[in-house]
Amino acid sequence: MEDGGMKFEGNNLFSIDPEHVRRIRLAIGVMALVLAIFNLFFGDPITLSTGRWSWVYRMITELFGIYGYPIFQATIGVACIAWSRRKSSNT
Image (cartoon, rainbow, N blue to C red; front, side):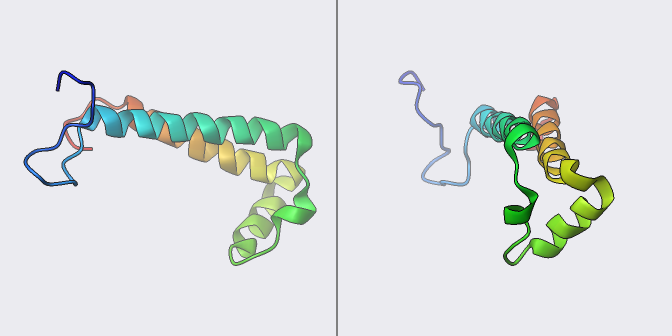
């Protein structure tokens, strides 16, 4: 499209342009890496172990200590960035 907007095939909202999907994955990966760096220096492991997914955080903290949560976030960030950099027709 000439206006730079989102491209849809017909009226199907699920046919988003793959380039936009790639950019969204890249943005999520960069945000996760920024959060990982922030939590590496300013994280508080006590507040991270509450809620429904506390067993995941507890297990990661038991494996990696106080660096567990930043490692978890960095892994998600790197995976999203790698997924966005992949050259494939399937998205």
